[in-house]
Image 1 (tube, rainbow, N blue to C red):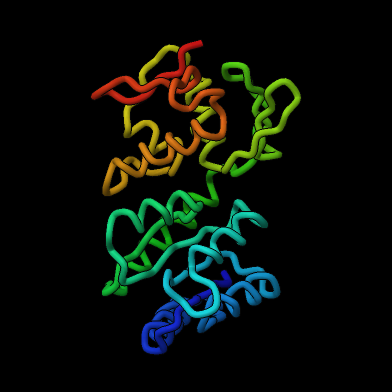
Image 2: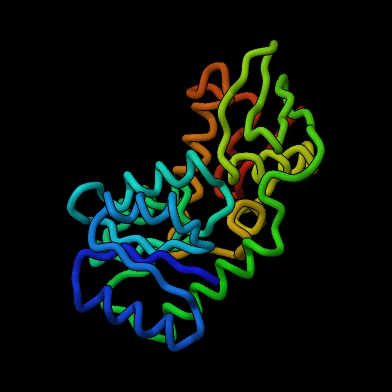
Amino acid sequence: MKVLVAEDDRNTREALVEILSAEGYEVVAAEDGTRAWQLFASERPELVLLDVMMPGESGYDVCRRIRRQSAAVPVIFVSAKGEEIDKVLGLELGADDFVVKPFGVQEVLARIRAVTRRASRAPVTGGEPFEIGDLRVVPAELRAYREGRPLRLTVRDVRLLRAFAAAPGRVLDRDALFDAGWGIAHLPNSRTLDQHISQLRKRIERDPKNPVIIRTVHTAGYRYEP
């Protein structure tokens, strides 16, 4: 497996390259965001480790560009910035995980194995089109359509909408939604889910402040009521 490591701190970058190379990964490394994007475009890595604060383009900027081109490549942010808002933003941009420095070798390897395992077994854009509310969702296009007008979706949007559509009228709790959207039973802070639902509503609801497709069930979770 080819891994792109984008990290402006030389010691951290070299340590990650050494760790991953010793585990048998093919590693390409970038010292800034601009170079990271160039390597992603030319080398086609199967996994990306991104520092958040880098010269040229930030890790967030690079992640945005990656997700515009590929929804399938796992992305892990590696950063000294440990505040909750940074984790939420990173996950909202489409990252699969977030590792905070300083980190242990085994932690990084375990997270890499976890995200690649989830990516390999979970269909990213597969599945037949389905309907939810007044939307027709087309997973292969990462779009939903309302009255012929396309609405852009992320991979997690499609996964969550599919989970809601498969359980009309039923309350889906946080564990069920994390499992559907992220492929894991839980994340460190439940605000990640609330933030994602909020952004999803902005994309699919006619009036995001008064949602009719995804409704909040206080203290319990969320529900799709046909």
